[in-house]
Length: 100
Image 1: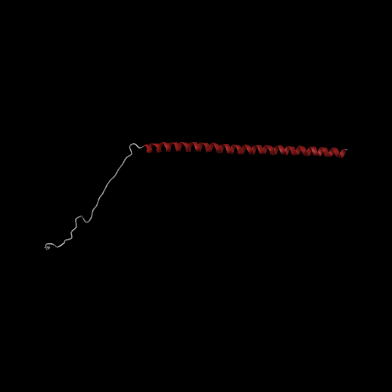
Image 2: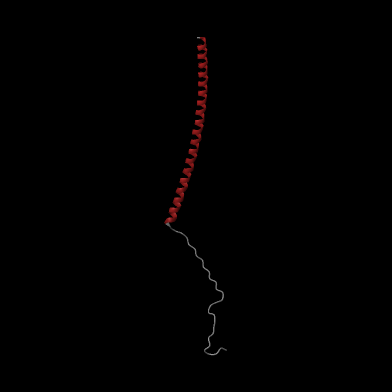
């Protein structure tokens, strides 16, 4: 027994206490969600268009480069034929000069 007037220490709560909670939410109507979905759709369309444009640009650059090579080949052939003509004219002129 505890004498009257003496202070006693005792515990008011349980030694082990466990608390649990569950929280769930669902977006039913949110303007930012719809605008984000529309923006994502728009960005996808822009990316698709950019891809198509890049493909067309690459095709155009390859075509221009190929055309440039063809033109250069024709110019080289033309210069070679001109060189042959000039050489033959030179030989003819030299032969005529020697005769005179």
